[in-house]
Length: 469
Image (cartoon, rainbow, N blue to C red; front, side, top):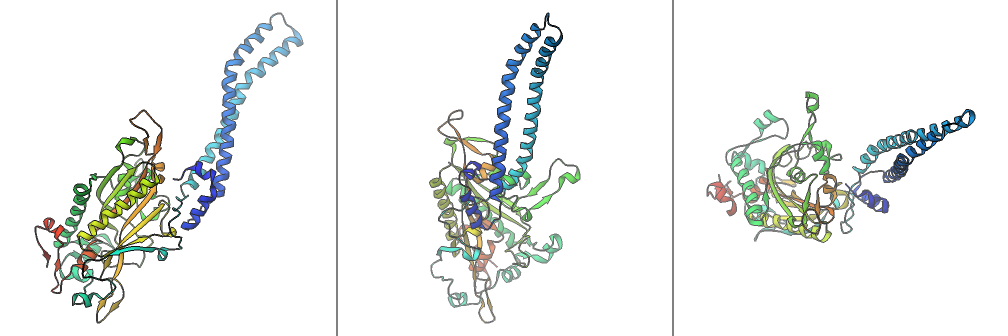
C-alpha cells in the first residue's frame, strides 16, 4: 500500500506511476474522497471538542438558572425554563451531529480503501518504460566455459539435444499420464530419480542460503487467511491466480487461500509487529509447496514441467531499514546469491531488467533471471530445438509497500520503547523452484549416450552418484 500522505502531496507522481505500469486506477476520485473524509473528520473533531467543553460548562449553568427560578412566576419563570431546556438539548444535538458525521466517514472509508488497494507502487525512475514483457532489457548473461547459447547445441556438443519431455520419458523421471488422471491438466508425478533430483535441488538451495549466506530457515503456512494475501499485495490484483478455499460456505469463520509463493508466509510472520532496528535486517528462507491456477496462461506451455499448478520453491525474503540505498544494495546482493548458485550448477543464464509494464502492482523494481533451456525455441527436424531462455527466478524490491499493508514496523534509534516507529522495507527473490528448474538442469547436462550428468554440488544429495541413467 502506498503512503496516502505522499499521494495527497503529489498525486501526479502516482498517476504517472500507474500509467507506466498499465494499471487503471482513479487517483482523482481517491484524492477527492480523501479530501471529503478529512473535511468531515475535522468537523467531527470540532464538534467533539464542543461536546467536551459543554460537558464542563452546561451543568453549572443549568444549576445556576434553576437557582434563579426561586420566587419567579409567569413569563419570567417561563423564559428561564426555556433557557434551561435549550442548554440541556445542546449536548444531545451535538451528539446527533457527531454521529451523522461519523456515519458519513464510515461510508467513505471502504470506498477509499478499495481504491487505495489498487494504487500501484510507482516504478523507480531508472526502470525502463515499456508496454509489455517484450520491452524488458537484458542486463547481462553468463555461460559456462566452452558453451555459447547463440550457437546450436548440436554443433557444440556433437549430438541433437533432447527436450526435457524426452529426457523425462526416457529416464522415467515423471509420470504425466497418471498425474493428469489424479489432478487434471498441468499435473504430474515425479518418479524415481526425478523425485530424488527434485529433493536434491531443494535441499541444496536451502543449505546454500542457510550455511553459505546466513539466512534463517523458516516453515510457513501455505494455507492462509485473506489478510495475508492482501497484506503482501497478491490481492486484489492477483486474485484470479490463487486457489480459494470457501470455508465460510462450510460453516467456518473465514475463507482461506493457497499461496503461490513462500513470500506470503515469510512476510506475514511479522504482521502487526514492531521490531527493533538493531535486529534488522531479517533474512529468512523457506521451502514451501506453491499453488497457482495459471488462469491467464491458457494454451501456454501446457506440456511438461514449465507451467504447472503445484510446485515447490525455495524463497528468500529480507526485511531491512527504510532506506532506499540499503534496499538497492540488498536487491543486488540477493540477485548475486542466485547467480552464484546457477554458476555452481553450470547453468547458462541472463539477467533481465523488467520494464514498467512488467513490474506488477507491488514492485518498485524487478529483475528476472532466465536460465538457458536447450529444449525450448523453434524446432528443426535435423538439429532439434534451437534453445531459448526461460524464466526461473524473479527478484523484487518493494520498499515499504508490503510492510505498510502488513503493519510491519521497526523502532528506530535503539531498543523497544525509544524512537519513532517506521515501516520496514522488504525484498524477495526466488532461490530455486522445482520441478521447473529441472528443465535447464536436465537439458544442459544431458550426454550423448542419453544419460544426464549430475553437477558436483548435487552429488552428496544424490547418494554420491555422478549421473542419471
